[in-house]
Image (cartoon, rainbow, N blue to C red; front, side, top):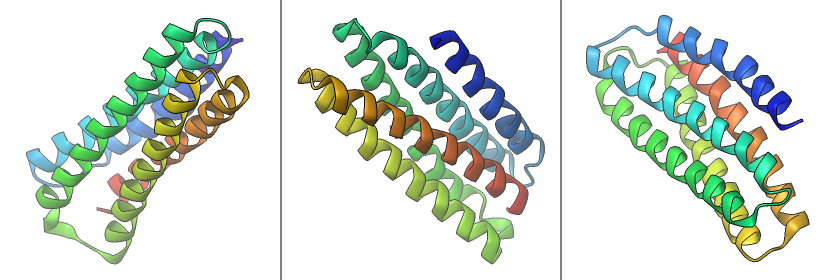
Length: 153
């Protein structure tokens, strides 16, 4: 089942992230920032997919996966912050709204994953599973928001 989830997340996120990279207009720094943020979101998705498998029976690996997810989300957030500065040439209302959604989505995903780190580490299995599921949803939403920002900015 875990490999099905991993494949599904890749099937869902990768076309969005590739589309985002192909539709970028802007300075090379802007393109790099958005591409790296997409790469880090994809890394977070892969780490969450591993957590789904590992949290079912390997507490140490589960905590490592959830912590890795939080690290990827932090890196993605840093790249979005850089993109705000580097992509400033074509700032429309839609672009601004999209970047705000990406930022808000990363914050939401980070809070959710931080809660998962806490609950998984405290052996609160049901809360851990629910947190990981919320994290999957949050990371997927960020992937959509990055694709929209790439289209609108």
